[in-house]
Amino acid sequence: VAARASCSVYSLHAVFGGRDELMRAVFERHSPIGDIEEYLARPGGDLSEMVRGFYRTAANALGREPQIVPAIYAEALSRPTSPAVQSLAAYGVPRMFGVLGRWFDAEIAAGRIRDLPIPLLVQQLLGPIMVHLLTRPALANLLAQSLPDIDTTCDVFADAFVRAVAQPSSATTPVT
Image 1 (cartoon, rainbow, N blue to C red):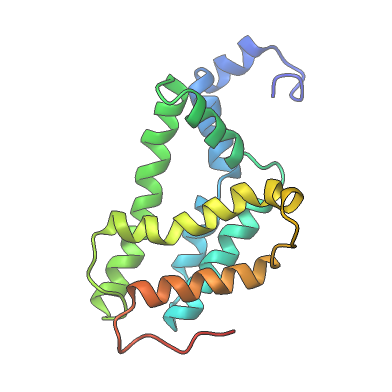
Image 2: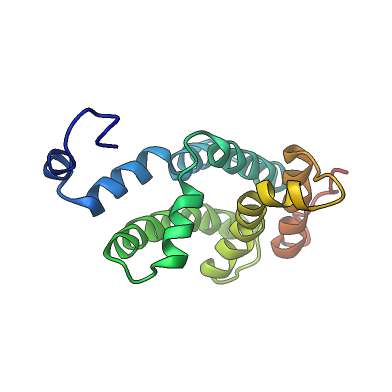
């Protein structure tokens, strides 16, 4: 970052208040949270379509260059107790849970989603797409078969999420 900004690392840290704050600024700028906040702020509609749109929003944001989320995961897995990881976790996790929690609360209140613990709903929603997007580049080179395109993948994950959490009266016919 310092080389690209044509300044010293010391100057960069002085401006941002240290490495942790610099990482937080990079995360804020390039993470999918802003895109997800913007998407979920729109008026909702059909649960299946909202979840499909959520997955497409996440996939588009995570596929944008520079791809920092894989680097953050690598840092978190290799140095989980580092101050930088702790700082990002203390900032990013509550923010993502807040964004998704507000949406889930509204969906539960509207009777579209079963009243399940928010952390489990967040994991059920984010787990498949995050694992897929983080492993997709490696799997594309390792598998003898091709992976489905990202839109098909989003449709499959959305259908699975809706089947898992929707109230019976709000589930719609999956798109195949």
